[in-house]
Length: 374
Ligand SMILES: Cc1cc2nc3c(=O)[nH]c(=O)nc-3n(C[C@H](O)[C@H](O)[C@H](O)COP(=O)(O)OP(=O)(O)OC[C@H]3O[C@@H](n4cnc5c(N)ncnc54)[C@H](O)[C@@H]3O)c2cc1C
Image (cartoon, rainbow, N blue to C red; front, side):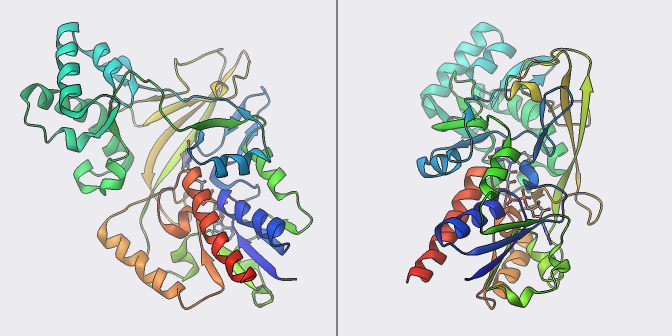
């Protein structure tokens, strides 16, 4: 029987491990340096019965029935619809900034005028990247664009990235739109939810297979019998695999400080963004996600910082042509190793949400399956 080594017990590694074991009936050893499974999606129930996402709040959403059905084999879902507020000049407004947000911060007449102009120029239910809105010729919309840019976008972006929006790749800035709608939900995908018993439980169910062996507290460099594996799936950082021979790939990281407070409720939404003031970018309140009851509440405060090897985790790749060129050199090197596959957010040097992470694993798995059945 073929044996696979999967490096990394996060969403991508676990998804690949399950499909290899279950559909190809192959053996899989999956390892992780961490002492727990789940990677960045790991969660745990604390002493107050509140499920905490250790590495920051995770909400699952997808438009893919295939992906939703796949995960639904391993979990039931709490039908969660995400809402985010942003504190601007001390007022809480829906994020992404939308028509309701406009009515909260501007006098009625001005808000109505801007609403009409926005709909005339871009149409209703459209998402317009803030950098595109800034290019408008209309004086009133220019005022609006400048307001949103300064109050909502600039402070958050500088805190998050330590760059101005113009210095960032459009794939990053484009994901922060102005939403010409009254829909306050943060996501509009067809399927949205949180695993009813947590992500970790869902992952445990995915790994529960006679062909899968899990080894935690184990780094790739600890594996002595590499040659005995037919294939290696590496979900760690590609540059680390190649011992940084073409240089380091830069990332931003996060210092996530989790605190329990002796109060039933702290804030008016699961996540509240703070584009202005404070060193943290946002606060998440975990009892919202599964509607858990307690007289205490658990919050996480996110402090962005630069990634430093050995000090913190690689979180957000800093995408620009120079870093992409370094990444491409690693990819070219990888092409010479037909039995080693790089996957996941670190293998791809991309910010991948969970949906995209799974889609990429499925794509790779289908190629491998095609060859096996070939
Ligand atoms: C703050 C934050 C919030 C997010 N919120 C959402 C959200 O709301 N919705 C959403 O869809 N997505 C969200 N995401 C994205 C989501 O976390 C990723 O899509 C997902 O974690 C990617 O899984 P992965 O397996 O590729 O990477 P990871 O989860 O990082 O797993 C990689 C694993 O590999 C291990 N590893 C690395 N190198 C080695 C090595 N050499 N040897 C052994 N083990 C190794 C690591 O320890 C890690 O456990 C969020 C991400 C962050 C950072």
